[in-house]
Length: 185
Image (cartoon, rainbow, N blue to C red; front, side):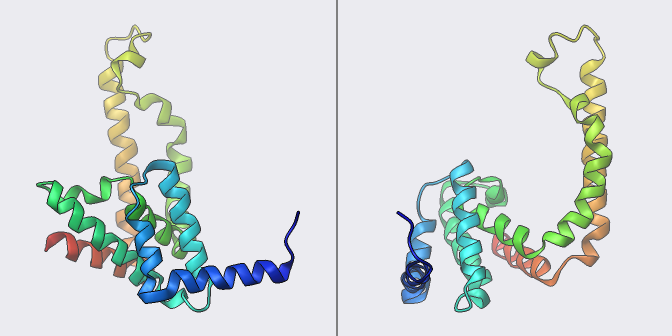
């Protein structure tokens, strides 16, 4: 059976109250779940969309994301000798950072990345380095040629990102500065 619009609104209101109670306690608890990969990306996307779309929470999303990141960084730093790799983790906290930036900076990201992605698309297949996948290629220079292709593709993406950095939205610059500061300390 379908629920009515009134029931949907009521459920959204109740969900919001639960997530907001005690300074986002429930939402922070969700971030402690051992979730990674696609599940983490889906949860993060929904949570960020929910928080950004709610008038009561829209001004607090960045602090929520940083709170989740700080909790993850503390846990990660206790387990790893190099906290600079914390963003390589594919868990809910890092996915929250990614989704927040994707949602708040979408037009900027598209304007910077779409042209370079279109330009490098024809070369992606020529970047394979896995010897098992190259086994069918009888060309002994394939590996070194593909390594050079990969370098060029990566260089193109990095050049586009670095040259557009000064035009990055305030939200992106602020969040990146906060993350860098937390990692360095």
